[in-house]
Image 1 (tube, rainbow, N blue to C red):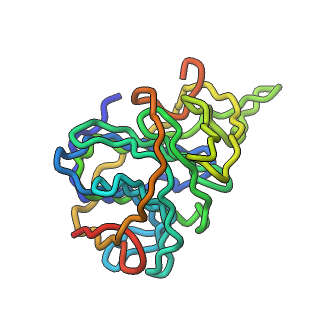
Image 2: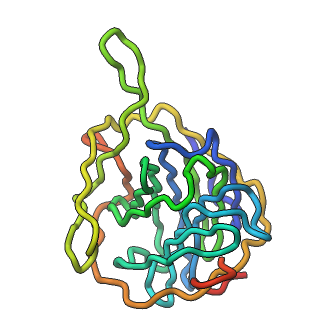
Image 3: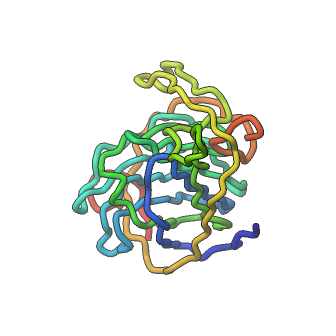
Length: 242
């Protein structure tokens, strides 16, 4: 299946059927050589000025080498999270995978599990994805897990979870308060894949300043994802953006 290339940034797209446990969003692109920042937002609506609620704000900051995670509710930012190594490089291609679980999002970068973000807003309210900043955007894909077949041939929704491409590092220096999660085994066959064209190139609002002090780490693996075997800110944090 072919995918659209070089999507317009800022990007805004409707998420078909919304977000639910097991739904995976795959974002591929290339960082500009002189990048300052970019951001991916899972929003509860299409609006950017003023901005609708954001269930997950994921924003790499190239000046401070931090990756900001946050949420926005009623135009107020929540507590900012930025602990972790910096897995992006100017001028290099990347793949980010956002996987919805019942209580949190799992985030992988370039085939390696990166972090988790607990749900602060109901995932059922997420309807759009917006992307802006210093990148060339190649593809945005929505992937669902395959149904499980029980005795008698009845298809059922699968249990929550995907296998990560590498083990979750529980080192206190990188993940001081999170235990290694357990993942169930899934076949890497995703029968339902959606690609949504860009719906708007309107402005994306403001973000604020990143918290300093990211812990060092090492990312390995290529452009993979969560699979197995054959597998802004107008309040309190983040960097300036037009």
